[in-house]
Length: 356
Image (tube, rainbow, N blue to C red; front, top):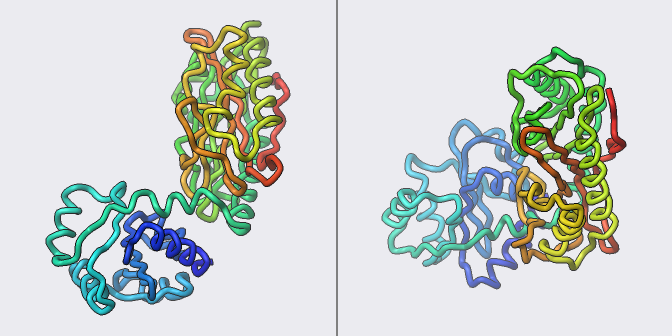
């Protein structure tokens, strides 16, 4: 796993003129090495790839980080980094400026002199946008678990139960089936609260004649799923059924038309134009989707400001919504893989208007 990812990284480093790269992001560290420990740095040069960690992980790290030289770093990590750079005659070091505070950057600069620090941009994140076959397998499993969880949810919804109680049962269901946790703080938003796009579970009790929006996912084997479904309890206001049908039309149209080569803004317009045509454009205030992988929000973005180009191997969400303050809201979301000819949908839960 690690070798081909490091090879891809070295190719990009060469294009950028980077002699070496220091990776501090825990997610990027795991992506490159497979190491699941909580502490460590990756140092990649043109000749070697190192995983620097501490005493606690000197048994675990060599077992997980195939192809890496695992080194127990000294009391000051940068002293070890400096020694390694000096041994290869390296005079400049790329670093992840998005993951390093100014205070840490200043300390690195002082400790690594005379090595020059060079901002490397989101170099590993760019690699992570294109999933390999093993990643897609893991993401399908995470999506399957989200689907199983939704089926479970349908069996436990009842008036008088709190959103938080349902959230807890969802979390337990996923963890009992291997998830490390939920992908993010689960949204269970019922009644008027369903108009809150990020209405995380509260103490509100499930009522009657209202919608409930569930937005959740499983973090399984290092990869996230992200599923949203909206269901009805009883007979909600007819306006809510109207917006449900519009959101579903927009979501299905996007799934039918999205394809490689599109920009993020073009993909976003597929859903946004339909919702706007029905007169609800101002009530769809977020983007149509986002990249998904080891983190629940990654590049690319499907938004009206995004020039990201969709490529085969990218995994994105498609999640249009309409939110009417004081009444309720609807969002419907699936996870998809961009393929050479179109898409493959990872999530499979029914999107028919469900009344409980």
